Image 1: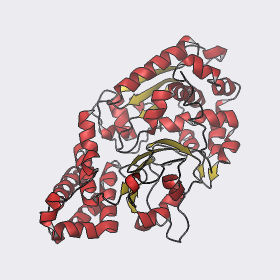
Image 2 (image 1 turned 90 degrees about the horizontal axis):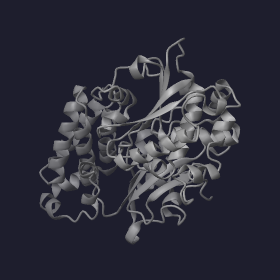
Image 3 (image 1 turned 30 degrees about the horizontal axis):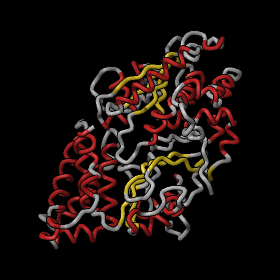
Image 4 (image 1 turned 90 degrees about the vertical axis):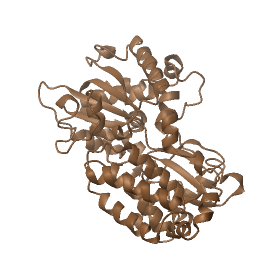
Length: 452
């Protein structure tokens, strides 16, 4: 089908990171067009486009913007969630590192639509060098009249600020992010009130991730109706996918969501097949928090149709036979990978990143980590598998924020689809200690985080 490129169209242009090259390739033209429109017209284009949040939840962006309260005399804010801490996800990093002006351009248009005069990029602490790139790009944009007072004679004022986080995964949740932005401990807030009513400093705030805001640029340039023609059904436009794991061509790809999963994995245009001539075993298609699927369910839906790389098709059948698009962190596992070990490393990560505010998450993530470690090391019992299932079930849906769900879903899916591997660990304790895990120990997200 070919790779559809809207966001990455000019990614390989020499010097595109800097203003002059970006401007030469249609940079900031969407801002010029937006200033000929009313905020209401821009909002309508975003709604018509069908753009859904690209950070994981997939909520319609235009609808989210329409919820923004507009009390008279009260400032409003746009906050870009650049806290890309989901293991397996790195597409926002790619955008910010190589095409930072695309995000800034999207923020100007979005801020104009929302009536926000002070907007923020909240970036994860480990992305220190990218924060510097963004600050340089913001300075370039301001020097060329795209930020500040009365931008290009439009009467619209805007300043953009970069706020570095402290490296906490929990701050990827929008209300924890806002708490951290305000200088407080990044604990999620109880909702309501929602950020659209009471967000940053108690003011109406929209929080969107990097890819979502960058997508506003092509939407304004090509119109929402044309953008909606790309993709299928409610999965409109393009989606950035971070592909990694046991594949020949890891990287960031832009797809139009009519792509089949099979073609995405095995086509030379994308992942290039499984590395070292191995067989496909399983995949986590949306970042570490979404359910893992074995190869047979990954490639076809419950009705036998080819599974597509979009929100609806990946979720087909619910968690019994489906998964989620999530953040687009596409982690491929070959036949040598040990599901129990990988589930343990993910449980270790979520235990470490739990803020501890909710007891089901605070206690449950620790219990799951200990039990999985026991099973992985050949010291488990058959009853431990059922105990794991019971613990994850009591975490899911019982916490203030989705981190509890993010910790529970990988464990549930691993047991649901790979229970035989858990039983193998229990029945073969001596082999567990000497088994060759291949790349398993290389892909420990918590170790990577600690080394960053």
